[in-house]
Image 1 (tube, rainbow, N blue to C red):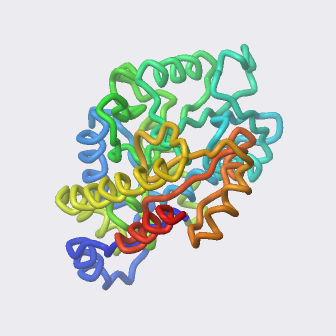
Image 2: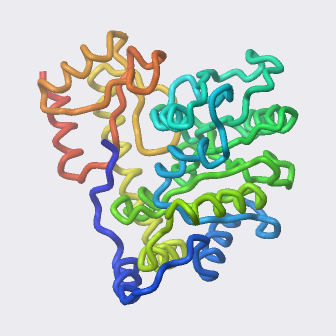
Amino acid sequence: MGTPVDPVPPVIRQALADASDAPGYPLTAGTPALRAAIAAWVARAAGAGVEGLGVLPTVGSKELVAWLPTLLGLGPGDVVVVPSICYPTYEDGARLAGATTVRTDSLTALGPDPRVRLVWVNSPGNPTGRVLPANHLRKVVDWARERGAVVASDECYLTLGWSPAAEPVSVLAPEVCGGSYDGVLAVHSLSKRSNLAGYRAGFVAGDPALVAELLKVRKHAGMIVPAPVQAAMIAALGDAEHADAQRERYRARRERLLAAFTGAGFTVEHSEAGLYLWMTRGEDCWATVDWLARRGILVAAGVFYGPGGATYVRAALTESDERIAAVAARLAQP
């Protein structure tokens, strides 16, 4: 399922405990300290400039992904563009707003359609682990700006690149957005970086005007990150040591699983970054799911992520070292 299994780092748990006496309502916009911590982290990780950058904490990243079309005022007649193979919640969010979804990896195929209001990109991608180069992302941003559409970039795996030849780049990087955040939003999460899936700790950064509009609606809708979680986020964003250690755990698990699955005859495609291996045996994905399940190994069927995934499965790196070792041992058996 891709849910973290490693412990929450002590520095984060202590920050949560220290802020637990929180009888008042928290700020929807986040405390000044949290907003500063988010901006500083985005500057480091994404190469963005802090000046003119809007930031806003969210109740995890999935909440924002699901509700962004609604928060932006989309509805019937509007179009949301999503990758051909992608996280299902992009399409779910469009449905919640009553908008139409178009799956495509080529915006030029859409032509001058004025109904496109939102374009989702996901790099590094889930489930494929594909990394989009800066020039590709820049073309997406330019295309959307010409039509007055918003580009939302899901960057939850930005810091988990495994190949020097495919280094993840943020939509907020100058080479992508041209130094302007107009019409651009980047969505981030601390679930994988800091094992905070249970805390529901995420944030969005980018166009300050769009962030201000999101804030207005979220205040009335009660979409507020609890005060203790805000304090924990500050600690997490300011501490690189635990994130580096977690990244190393995932790197080691990836190497072991990659060798085990390729040794068992699987072809791994993309997977240059993120926490998944995108694999095929050249057969219907349910046949592969069954073959693995008979060996006590559970994976996600590729068709969950779009028709283009019908012959693929997704394996997650988010299991303990002992379970990763068990997978490798079972795949090695005849």
